[in-house]
Amino acid sequence: IGHSWYTFDGGVDLRVLVSPFRFESPELSASLAELRMDGRIDDPAAKLGDFFMRARDLRVAGPQGALVLPELDAEIRLKAMLGDVLPLIDMTMAANGLSVSAGGREQVAGNVTLRTRTREDGDTLSGDSGLWLDALSGDQVPERVDSAWLGVDWHGFDRAATIRVQRLSRELDNLQLEMMMQAMSGDGDSAAMQEKAERMAALGEEMITVMTTQLLHPGRTSMTLKMVVDGAGERQLTLDSALDYNGLDGLNPSFAELQMLPPSALARLADLRIDFDAASALLPPGLRAGLVHYQSSGWLRQEAGRLRTRFTIEQGEVTLNGESMTVQQLIDKGQAAARGGVGTAMPEDPDSGAY
Image 1 (cartoon, helix red, strand yellow):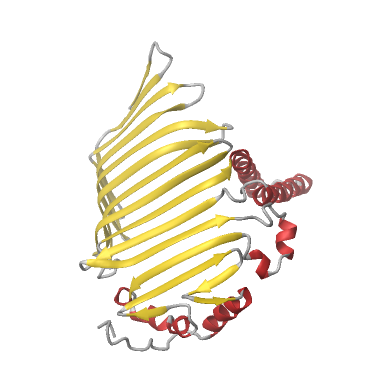
Image 2 (cartoon, one colour):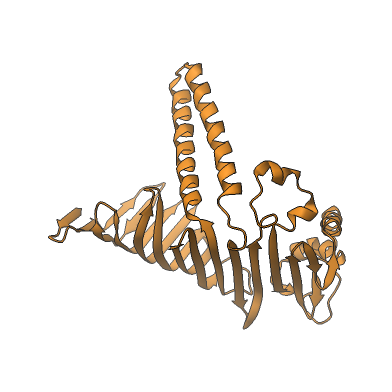
């Protein structure tokens, strides 16, 4: 059931309600206690407004498994629609009591919260996203994990280039859909198909050009990725990483130039920092065994029951766990670790109690 109220200030209020239902069959059962969506559009021409969703007690079960979602709430604020293709939004979504089962056993359960925000900073775009997980349990959740957080923050992506990339992506998707429909219908117009294929190739090349020469701003474009995992009364994992884009001598190289750059020059395109720290006992034995070659080659350090890595590239200078090296030496280390294979037990760490 849908309702629309047109207000005297030029706005529109919306409400959509789905009636509670219960469905049963030998193959599938489903039920829903409540689903309600509300919206307030302040400027119908600009399509800006606030939107809310509330769902209660959704249950779906079949031969492959079952899903239970007692509570879902979402709030979306559409702040702007750039070029009619790129929305700027603030969104928060929370799912509490989520449970996924298979074979009669709970695989994953817990609470999930997602928040994402995008904004304009002059001629560039920025944003951040965060994912929170807590009260975790189930067969697919590691024994020592009960909560986690993942955060991403990004800055300095060119506004006009991002809009152009979005438009190119939409046109490519439409052309691909048209070609699929034409092929399924048995239309034998090969000339039209060839024309669409050539158009797709041209659009793909333009997208690569825009992304390499216009999307990023040397000295202004940056990203961070952070993650923490907790459980068993301690911090199980920490990841802290950052990337700052430098360009090549302060400029954006073309895609053709990028393909010609040696590894030492590619390393100067961006400064990178990665700090990783995880409890050895968090990793399953098979994975720990596969990491032994990364430890022996210097990629990982094991100290007091923890695996640690600190890796930086700054102005093309590489440092791995306190050891300075050239880019080629770093590549050689990676190749040596990869050639090491999987299945050798990691040397025992007497302080970890995990082996």
